[in-house]
Image (cartoon, rainbow over all chains, first blue to last red; front, side):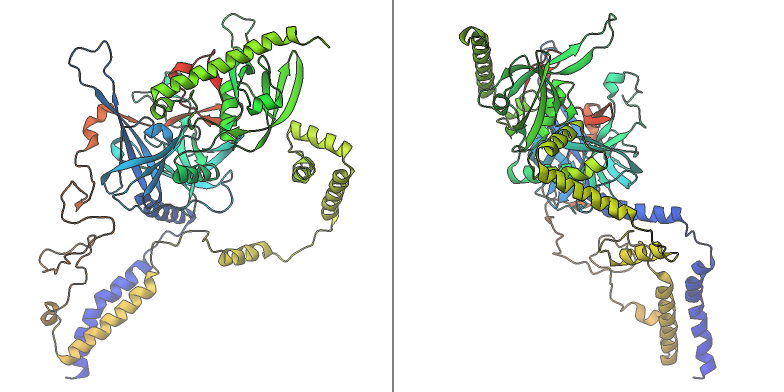
Length: 399
Length: 210
């Protein structure tokens, strides 16, 4: 066979291949910053999406007393997002799975499997689920420096009909409180995004999405779906999430700080009728015997106004800070007694309750009997102290 | 706090980023502790000394060069590796191989169609690969993906049977599904997720123990 004879068909066969190879190079291709951003975001989302799941938590509601006879109990389902942090462990928020009787997860592939609740912590609003029949690709916790204002964040979650949601934004602000902090993001979040993943530019988990600013039920001006989108969104940063996750995985609950006080709200009423009242602090109503509050010298009637240099306005705020502070840590309290300021350093102890009584979820965790007894014991202690306090001026001679 | 806690506050005290309580404590501690006072004076002198050093002029582009070098040395990439392959050398090699193959076939006098039927199927067993229906495919049996059980049809999601899968769809009960997005309050620059307080203890006069 002559060279020319085979060269011609060979070249004819090679031409389409050459055209394919050269074609795209000849066409203009976007190489700008925006296309690079798009490529990176796509790569992050593609890699992380299988780790983001939808969490369904079902609870049977008791039949109301005024319901027509024969009414069946209604099953309510709460839906949120979750993030696989280990191949069989999914992190979500406590508000999604609170009081759930049955929990399911649905993967990005549409697979639905049962999940068991390993632990729930309503103080940090986090919950850990175990999925034994499925292996999920876990997301890594961001190991470098904490997220800073301006850092890019990709949020991945699910919303109505378990449809995936994705949003790109930045850390707008970092809100710090004693014991915990929150990242304010410019990302848009959607109903069902509670427990969604907030990822950095390396595709690592920098936070767990909690929610957005304000409450639709409080504003009362929301649309049909009870929501005004576009407000600031918030995520719990990985520095707060990680110790809580480790504690939930290890023992199923989280250690909380304990002061040993019973408090009431104290506020200054406005001069105008119906005007806003100014919160003053946490008014000590009772002291639990042998607790840190007793050791530091707090007494009923004292008004606690500062915790570790932060102004205390409401008992709920003080309780949150105490609970979020790890036991064994020294904190400084400032209180007012008969118009005179006092301060003292106090070592917080371990909270005797895994979930504080005044938080929702206590009812699900503690049986009715022991809870009643615990409440009665507390009330007896409080009354005994009150009695002792009233007897005190009569018993001790004035200085 | 004692002497060991004081040095931790020096930086914040110098930058005036200290809380009022910390400032009060530190200043009263300085008044009573000569060692900490001297330590702080040393600290302040050192910072002033560094601040008073002359500024060095560097060659233009040093910062960029240093950053580029640091980036190369860092384990974590600054940007994710691009999903698109470096396709130009790949396609060029493919083109050369195709030319070489065609030339060899022509040289041997064998038509490409004559060999196609004997070519083994490389995509057998891969779920994601699309296989033309006309091509006979040797399927891999007994192959088991991690975490999945074979055989039991307990609900097929995305075409794959799965142990423990839930057959019924929840989305039929959309009226009873509440999609959660927690409210966060922002007051005086502080933000926190609204805790779900027990309904029995809500209100102004609520007594809470902690």
